Image (cartoon, rainbow, N blue to C red; front, side, top):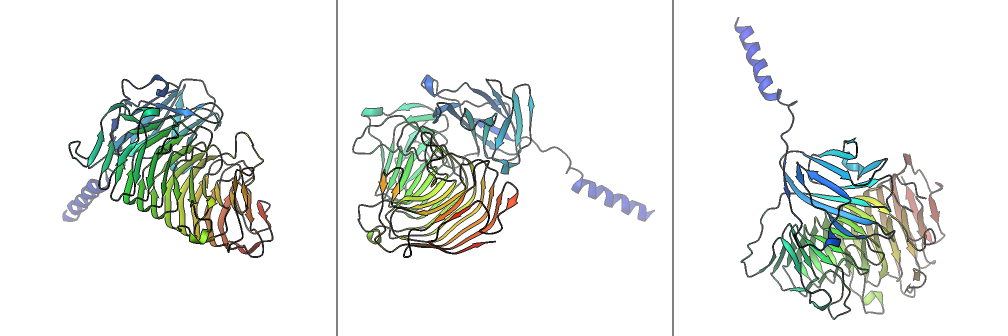
Length: 486
């Protein structure tokens, strides 16, 4: 009898411990940010209706892409358990994709409504009828915000919910000083620019939108968000919507800067790069989303020095956990401007390239543009560069490593009179699902400027592993050495 009682007790204990494993998870909660009531009508989007956790998510028109279709985006915060998201396109469609596929989202369609569940915060893109050049939707689901700054703090520049027009063509940018925090709250849209020059300990953050649609040619420049010679600073969470043909965001001569959960939407063709890193070091990007009409991200050497050896070096840069979409030029690139003492210790890791097209006006005639690119115009030294765990959904070309003296029909000119080389470059766990050429090009300059010690490890193209340099995807010139395929 005691044995029976003991067995029943053990069974009851096991049921208490494990019996709830099959119970459905409690749904999470959603914070939705209403668009400002006085938001200009052209910034509102009606191409999709979206709910998350049963709440309406207001959408924005981020601007027209290269093919004159709107790029739509919206955002919300989520906490706790899973959240159900519904998307109802206004227009009819036959097929759809939810990207990136690495999220492994399970979805269903009932009439025109697409439903899926987010287990945790993530950025999700909807493409209809496989038309990457058509109207697309980007949703930014974020973890609940914490440590919101006090609006009354004298070191805080605070914009609450609403539409804030800082003057457009006649307005000056927000100028930040050392120790200040710029906070743009969820539901806020600030029309203007931001400058942080020769500062330290600056933070730019919030769940709102920094929006720019004007070019002034004034003394401050027209980049929407610019950090110049900033150190120990941070950009976090904000959405930068740039509807101009100027770079969206950039840093120059900066160090020890973190860019976390940044979202850049700048689809206008072209030169609307997402967030460029110029002549800087000890930089970390983590959790970035970019849809740009030019390079999504470019790491450059920009200097007034004529000799690269005298210019600022570029080193210790980590770019990880990102989603990149580029309607022209490159998904991720080092170059083309490379006036720097050296480029060293640069890592791109765990990145989904959602889309990469070469050029609206010159398709298939610019073979130096690719999803993953190193393009050097100026003789300098590149070493210890790694691209790992990269997934490419759709792109014209896969990998380009090139030395040259001209870029984009002579728009940029370089020089190879100085010493220069590229070595210790690794491509590891690169997966392409693309229907493009998937070309892998390696092109050094001459006998004194070689590309050497390049490793291609576990390169998988549409289910087939690249085994050796005889693979037809490779294009390699004679100014290379010690290329290894594993």
